[in-house]
Amino acid sequence: MTLVTGATGKTGAVVVAELLKRAMPVRALVHREDERADRLRGLGAEVVVAQMHDHDQLARALTDVKQAYYVPLLSPHSLHAAMAFAVAARNARIDAVVQMSQWLSHPAHPSVMTRETWLIDRAFAMIPNLAHVIVNPGMFADNFLRTLDLAALLHIHPVMTGDSRSAPISNEDLGRVIAALLVDPRAHAGRRYRPTGAKLLTGSQMADAIAAAVGHRVIPVRIPFWLFRKVARMDGVDPHVVLSYREYLADHRAGAFEIGGGVTDVVEALTGTPAESFETTARRYAAQPFARQTWSRRLRAFVRFNLAPFWPGYDLDRYSRQRAFPVPPEPSLAADDARWREEHLAQHPVPSGAGA
Image 1 (cartoon, rainbow, N blue to C red):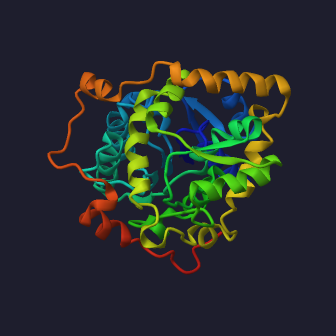
Image 2 (image 1 turned 60 degrees about the vertical axis):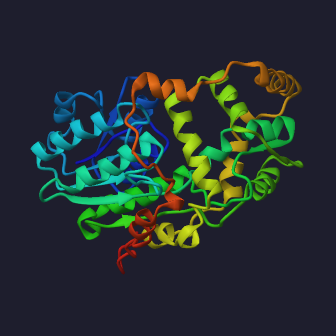
């Protein structure tokens, strides 16, 4: 039995579907019963409801489980949840964990979420007799395509990364990579894999790909982070996520996602199929209802866009102070940290014969 945490999420749902295609029994861990949980049942998964911060609920979810996919929470209590899972996994004596990490993971990063991810990496590695596999992608294509409605309706693509580049990977490709690792996780024990998209792109080049997806010209528009803070609050984005974006964007502009060449063949090596292009991913988003091009939707988007500068934005420094997040004495972006470079550039190659 394979346990998939975050099973209704953007990678978890793909992992569940891919494992079921391989006729592997799957237990999908969800936070609540809803239509997404029903869809997983419809695919053939066993669905359990559990809170990630509750050790006892996690222990029950891990009963008779051989291996698990663990994706950290995007919340101020991510480390608490991970430790609860680690203790439950050790007590259950499961064989393997494939863990979602992140390319920027290091202990002195300005982002508390990234520092906690580094600790989670190490905590899971300390579980005796566990085959621990780390997947540390860079930027997700989803990060750049959540605003595709602006491109579809207003012909603009917001850019906050300057001229720096990354190779954004789709949720679908990530899910396929994770599923491939779960087929035989012991063959990958102790390894780190950096799956990426097909090509390094600037924000302007992403705008060109999005233009092809929506069927008309799209202009890349550089927007300041203060405006992003306002739009994020307008859209109800969790301030903890926005806080991390501030640091990730700084690392992006510093070239962190171009280091080591920026593009790997991990997706193809593990799944047998190359990573899809950013345009292919964008076309999938363009087909969703939020990007449907009608005059009424275009008018609403225009009004919201013009209201954004006047909307109250998140005060991220105040948010950090209120929660008393620990701060390293000498924080450094990943791109500027020699230890991070040494550690992350020593990525393991994909073992021969390990693909799908």
